[in-house]
Length: 457
Image 1 (cartoon, rainbow, N blue to C red):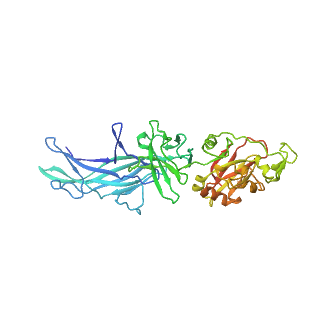
Image 2: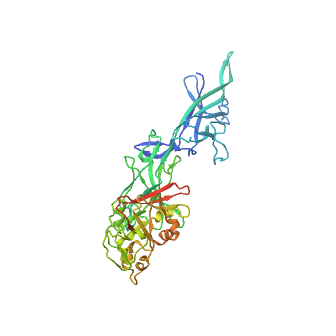
């Protein structure tokens, strides 16, 4: 029987088992180098008299007893997906370019390998590896056995999926006073292409903590459930107010085919009023703000003058119109709101990003303060040893919040720094008209593109 050539493709195999089956790693991140080489093996096979099958690997140096084996060549061609291949070396040569085709002649134990860079578009990348070899084939001529050179070739196919994991830029979370999640958080993500048949066992969510010094550590990961949902449950992690956090969706975590999403910043920020009017803004208020509860307060339309006034609403001279606080008596017509944006300031540097308050119908004015959330009543009562900050705030100027936005960086960069470093962040707000429009805080980049927004109803 004439000899023939066989080319087999080899995949890197995951050692983990899913539902009793070994998982094949056949996917990587789009527009990135696949973590494992594409490896093909060439075998020369012949059947001797009597039906005995002999198989030989194609080696550069023929072994004893198989003089008819010569050096092989493996040509890798990208036929689908738009990626590229190049000769595989270990360590890889970063200077070698990727192209649609490459010929590999260097091998180990009959194996020929190429590096694959996946295409930019999510989908299947197909590479055909064609092995070619010149073999000395036994042939009988005039009753004599001679060895005649013969060109042989055989292809094999690699299919590697290029995956793209899309996630939102940030995920808001609510934590209690001890720093633990107050409610389960389900992380949103998509994996493209949707045709890729991945299993939940391959998918996880990894949480990272970044200290104030910039040191980054992994806090651990959670596995996707049977419905492929990634849920960070209450009690699974404790979040420090001093540090920042982000999550990443990870496919094939720790393996050659690992694919990671962009960072999803975990943001505990919110605009929080004193819903229960107990003089401190705490977890109970935060929870209501995150859930979107509406805060109700009266319009500052009476006429206070220093420590005097009628406090009768609807007067001709309304306090909200003179753009100042009309004495300590007028402070009762203001309410505190905590700009809990330390996380935002750590992620979006106020030296680069703009922080703006918006009111669609320009229904409120505000005053910056130096108060802390657990002392939110001090603007009415003073502190433990004096009437400050009530006396100072009683003569402060107010600023309108307009639809175009009021830039906090411009008013006071020091105010934002105190939120970031000292736990401050209380503003006092007065209403100047009836409104159901929310108060919005938005963050803008240098091109004035809104990158984050949150609202208080």
